[in-house]
Amino acid sequence: MSRTIVNEIAPDVFRISTFIPEFNLGFNQFLVKDEQPLLYHTGMRGLFPAVKTAVTEVLDPASIRWIGFSHFEADECGALNEWLETAPRAEAACGMVAALVNVNDFAVRPARVLQDGEVLETGKRRFRYRATPQVPHAWDAGMLFEETTRALFCSDLFHQVGEREPITRESIVGRFREALVEYNAGPFAHYLPYTPRTESILTGLADLKPDVILPMHGSAFQGNGEQAIREMAKMLGNILGGLP
Figure (spheres, rainbow, N blue to C red):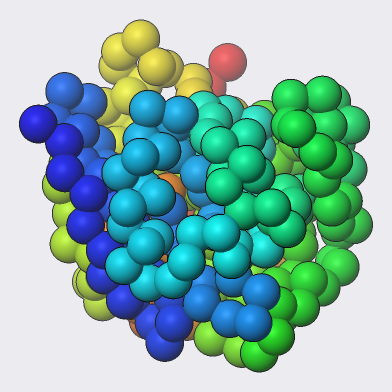
């Protein structure tokens, strides 16, 4: 039976996590409390009631202003329309490819298009958008880096299987490697591509020097994010770089 929990993992940054035993996987949303609250990841439509209840523990769901996600996928933005209907001022915030190819057709109102490097200010917070095509996967992929807390919202990078603690200071690179090995041996093989641009994109993320890393699946990481990303990039190159 799935269960949803809420933890504050940085000042006014809340991790909402639902562990689904059938998948042996947790699905995380991140709620940032500010003058213009932001929800990163909506979760699948089936999770909407539980996620909405969890958001209510922190703030009025109708007050959410921005909905962010990396790429068009059920666990990233499946419940986008439910949130747009719940919060009348809310807008999806995503890259141009995501908006033009998927979101503006799927969603009940148009997205706010973010250009690579553009900053979305929500009050005290500054979210810088980084276009990351095919990282973690999908043509439209991108990430947000919150500059005041130095928090990187990294989607499926650092993916961890199992039920994990809300935040850790221990390395999560090994956990990510375990997930890659497990997935590449089954029906979800090649879910994370390795392209000629992967290394340079990861180098750019490492150069942001994040203090907090916020994956979609598993524990958040607090510590030397630059080192973690560089170790992860080397690991990905070793595992995926030579695959056909």
